[in-house]
Image (cartoon, rainbow, N blue to C red; front, top):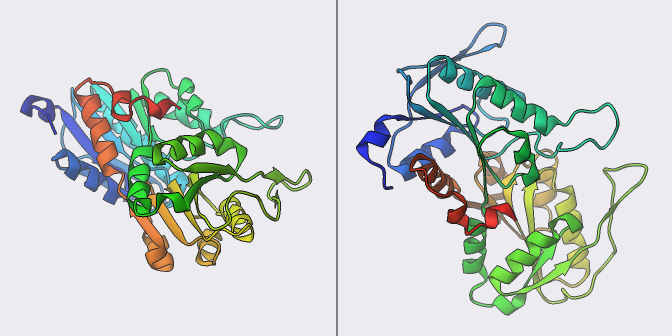
Length: 334
């Protein structure tokens, strides 16, 4: 990385406890070490954080995915992040950049019913209120959520890392593969991947029950996939219901195999049970959230894609005051 010694002296990169391994890999890619933070819980479960060294006048970069992990629940990870921001602000940090590889609550980005919150906006406002001067996240559910933050909000994408991994996987027989959009909302992304990979794209229609929004309705089969290996692309896999139902339709339509690729592998119960089944043959997911439990259950079916190099390049651009979007040729604002 092209840092000067002077710029490094004014940078403090720290991690929350939700996914410290990713922060450590990112720091290694940058050629730096993480700064130390003291953290503990009081007897009543309240969190405490403190920077071990002065951050006065420095640019503090906090890396914390908002996921359940060593810090506890998603909400524990959020509170820890808010405390880390507040501590840096009160210690006179000049800038505070918050890097959230995965931002929780991002799917709650609009009001669908009366008297409910726009939770994504509430989270962003809380981060700004605590003192964050810049936000960074990867493949948010809705990139328009950036508009809530009054300042720089860099939206990164794992598209290049996922595409390169898939390209290597299909290189021997690309004509055997098609990209499939699991629903209408991912059609544009599926078309982009298909164009980049040089293969065809197919759509699997989906509707939801009017009486129970958790119930998906799909056709029993679709044309255009018989004998092919289908690649399903999504931004995240949570309970895997949408993904597996799409894969089952593809298998019923004569697909030779189904590969799933996603940025965020939340894999909430019963996702692992569903993914163990025969519908999905291989799974490609980046490590924006911890995948240890998934690897233990899914074994060789799961292929982990390293996202630390993407984060490191973005952080380098932020520190050097160069373009972040140029890293992705502008495709991070699709």
